[in-house]
Length: 252
Image (tube, rainbow, N blue to C red; front, side):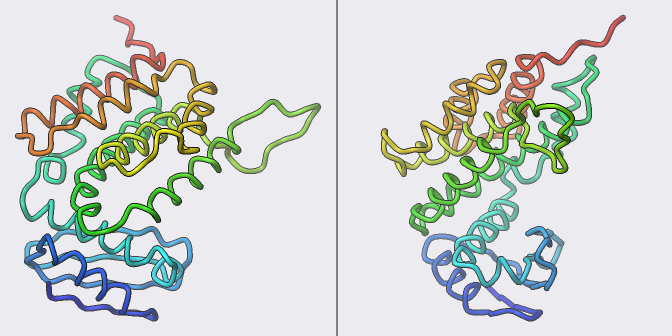
């Protein structure tokens, strides 16, 4: 992999990530990493005809998770190059099929895109976890889910007004299902791990969303689907979320 790191940040995490990734996988096109000072900069990957571009904040690039984050993004690049349907299919196309004839609020539509991203991440991390231990990922998922469960909406006494948005209970259940499914898919979590307790707590806050159904859907994704199979899987999981969580149909 031809790798170039630009911006004010270390190259070492990306170089070590490349070396680990290339023990099992390959990215053929050159990769440019842009490290940006803004701590709120989202980690983004762009795919082009002649290269890939990875944008990461300086904060992320200097964190203990930096090599694992880089490996994860290299995995997305590899999936794109192999034309895996999870990385080449237009998400909008599948969502149109899934939601035709329904009126869906913007919040739920954003969640549907997040669910599609979870499916892409599962296929990327099928590669990631072949070269990277799961320990840091497990800890990250545990802390993220714990924060979301703690931040769920609660009734405030009197005239108190919350100044920041709370975690959405419905998508938190889906996020929990994704975490468990990914880790179970790679035998990377013990049966008594705290993530299961957190997932059950999340599910109790949104009884209209089935933790078990989403975990099963994510965990059972075919490792090598064709475009039709992948489209069907994405349509099915989208409908599961929109229909089971109570989105009304369009009136005739």
